[in-house]
Image 1: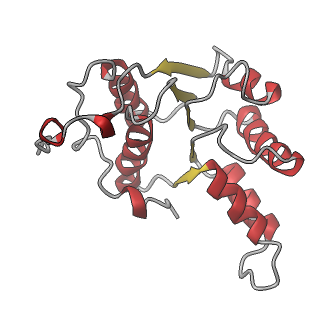
Image 2: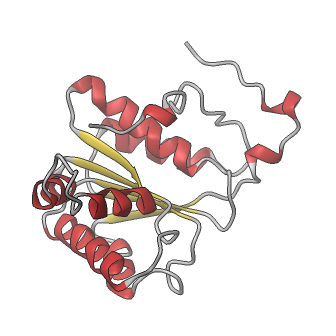
Length: 188
């Protein structure tokens, strides 16, 4: 159920916390994984700075403790929900939607990259509003401007200082680093 197949190597042990600009995000993500309470919003203006890696690492950390979690890239999540309407779907829409809204830990990766149809905006709002109302642990990553590019109903909930911790990851694109500088020895 965790949906981490493509992110199997994205753990805290494989994250290079020595990269400039990631230390605070790394510490907050570690703390959140130890005590999944409230919301953690990891943002940046760029790409490849470690937001997704840290979000996946949180899920990897809680799963061995029998904590139910779902990691979902937002556009893929919406496509998956849409597919439950099809005649070939083995899962009913209501069942899948309720599972997403109520899972003990939900990670929404790349918020703001979804196709902003009315249906997509409404489904995201319903998921986030439910989790907000019930104070369910949630991690969100985005490289979009929360004040300009995210639905105001959603950004208002994300920015609630009584619930959320907003962390700006200010690091260069890891993928653009020379290969020899990308090598990182995994911690045991």
